[in-house]
Length: 308
Ligand SMILES: C[S@@+](CC[C@H](N)C(=O)[O-])C[C@H]1O[C@@H](n2cnc3c(N)ncnc32)[C@H](O)[C@@H]1O
Image 1 (tube, helix red, strand yellow):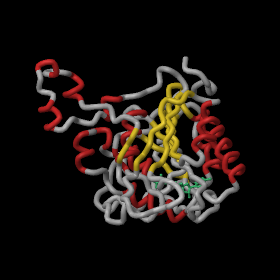
Image 2 (image 1 turned 120 degrees about the horizontal axis):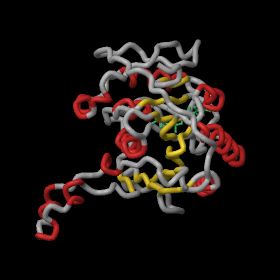
Image 3 (image 1 turned 180 degrees about the vertical axis):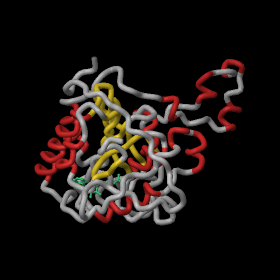
């Protein structure tokens, strides 16, 4: 077991990235502070704009060498910073998609001097043409009614009708409310549905996902649930405890059933976040799950701006 694999380190990502070997990551999936003034128990979301953009560039440059040559990067951001961040990333990588996450905010008045903002912006970037992408893993099945409506002979047996459709780049998924079972005490927790879609599409089974800003650990849980490895960082010890609790829960039964790789890998090494940044899972509440052995990963060459 590598010291960094299936671990979340309770420390500053920029200080901890040296733990991760270059060229060892299949997917960087990260949801950094948006700089909208939120209180994460640190000042990361409350920076002067120029400092925030310089810091973003700094962690991007520290993280990219960790990515494999055919790896991908998803970054969550907001329309306020997306233009600058995307231009900065386009100097280093190739942009594949801008995904709009429609948070399905109900209509309840809202601002009167602009249109109410109800979406987050997500950029998908790659290094090379042969980047890993498994559309079949994330197709959305057609409902029975649509299938019936396409019952004309020209559609019968059509592969696309059986396989389901491309989720496209507008994702309408409700933000998490208090009543959602997966909701924990983090102000900007992302829905597992979204993160699992990204992991399944852009990280091969058994591959490694890096999130520099774990928050409540959604990326780690999504990786574990889908049979991938994870690694990453979170600055706030309270969130580190929350994510340890989430990781101590076994994956949902349907995921255990459908993905054998999801079995036996929900436990991470226990340490006290206060004394050791290596992050701990609280003892499993229901049952212990065996760790899988560490996967050997090969270093790769320097970053590349163009698709090859
Ligand atoms: C937008 S939240 C991530 C939410 C997460 N995706 C989830 O679903 O819970 C960003 C997180 O980054 C953490 N953070 C800020 N600066 C950091 C740093 N330098 N290193 C590691 N974590 C940091 C914050 O404490 C916050 O929890």
